[in-house]
Length: 202
Image (cartoon, rainbow, N blue to C red):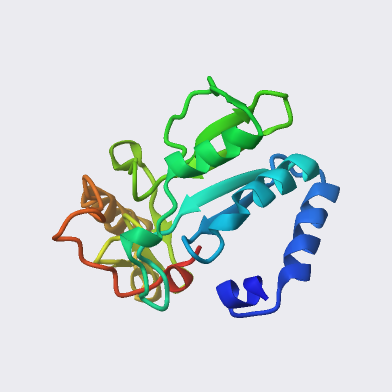
């Protein structure tokens, strides 16, 4: 029932079958994203960690961001990186992960007993904007320099109007050049993007 509440569809078997298919195909690492929402599924942190350990997949916990379709986001619903790590460490002791972070959005934590690792993407409580080099292309051809960007660059229009490779490169360069220094989610001047994560793609 919970997955229906969260995803608005009865898809648990499809999700589990997809994970099994990825493992059977030999993909590695297989990463499973989990968005935690306080009061909704924050009681399942250990269950997800156990699932990842038992199956050999990397769970990536993502802090709840103000990109939900219902517009119900509030900071008190965010389960922070610190809370996630503390909860897991109390059951499955952790050790520092010495792999370089680079531009990867997830902070990685390794189980001391060698049973794998998990990641946390702390977009709200510990934003990584200063090292982010990511952009996103939506399914309808819009390039976004940040998930929280208020403007999009219409690459589809460039292509459909007969634009050259140079025209396309100029549009991409302009978008990337306007990338923000930070998304300001925790600031009073934050403006919520008009499109939700499901519309942006992700």
